[in-house]
Image (tube, rainbow, N blue to C red; front, side, top):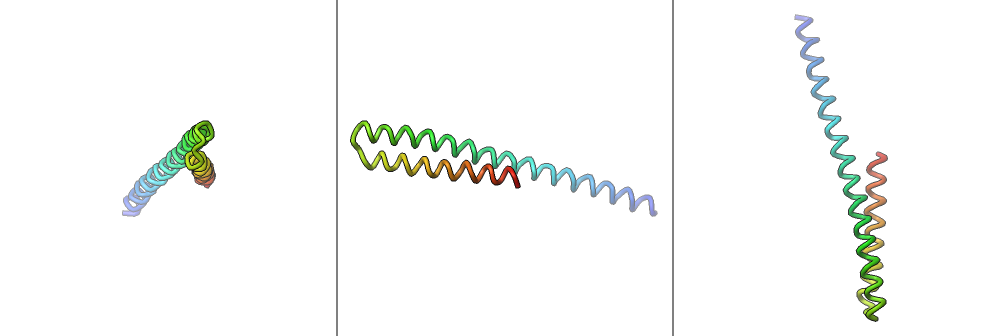
Length: 84
């Protein structure tokens, strides 16, 4: 009976380690997605900022700057998540 208990415990430990590994992989993927979204928002924001400057549309220009800031924040959040 002792061997059965040890076998069950080892099996449960293995399953727990698998689940922990999956959670860590999912967290890394989520962090990478945040970083990518942040970079995309920064690029789109820059395009909008420049378009606003070219057309004299202050609202578009400021919206682009805001989008860039949002992108920088998303990227930093992703980096922080990846390090955790």
